[in-house]
Amino acid sequence: MKKGIILIFIFCNIIVQGQVNRLVDAKGKEEVFAGLKCHVIQRNSYVYLWAEEFDKALKPYLSKMPGLVYPINSEWIDALWNEQVPQDLKNLITEEREKEERRTGLLARIFDVYLYVNTEGKVLSVEYRMMDCLFQKLKTLPKNVNLLGVLTDRLLKMQYPQADICKPDNEFDWKILNQLGLDLKSDTEFSTRYGVIRVCGTLLDMWGTIDMRKAIDGTSPKSPFPEIKNKNN
View 1 (cartoon, helix red, strand yellow):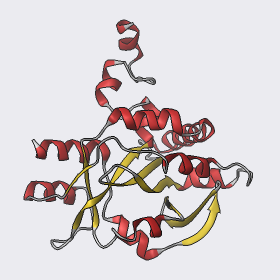
View 2: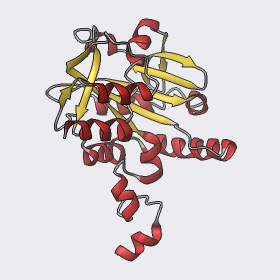
View 3: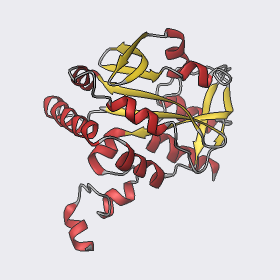
């Protein structure tokens, strides 16, 4: 049962854990971006930002990689996206995602939010990962437009309803993690004191949910199958 939970977690919530320590080590430059005082690292076509309090909030935990959080509460994540993310930010995400997908013909992983939580479910810190095209768009906004600052303040007040955190503890788990191309070694240590939850902005922007069942049966806010939704109504 645990294998199944972790498998669903990894493929539906794909957490790139191997990058956490590399980001902290790299530090990046500190700046105020979209109202958020943060560290910024640009790598190829992606930009990584994490809130200023990242180091302070996670200092007691960072000697180990974050563990796997399960079960994934899709309703909580859907509500977070639909109720907490500013509409102006969602509009920009949609605009840049569609533009990038027209340009490349590929699904654009445009924007993700990573929430670092403890065993009580308290959100300790927030990290954002976005494509450079969205980053550049956000840079053009007036300085008084605090889209990420507002979102971060909201997220840091949230409580994940269940935060059971486990380590990958068998060959099956490690095989799945390594197939995702993570920079893990045999002696990599994972924590059970804190974990990371990925809020997949690409899926949420397209479908309004991370629950594939809702997307397929037409019950999600932005179902890709409107004919099924109409039939159900």
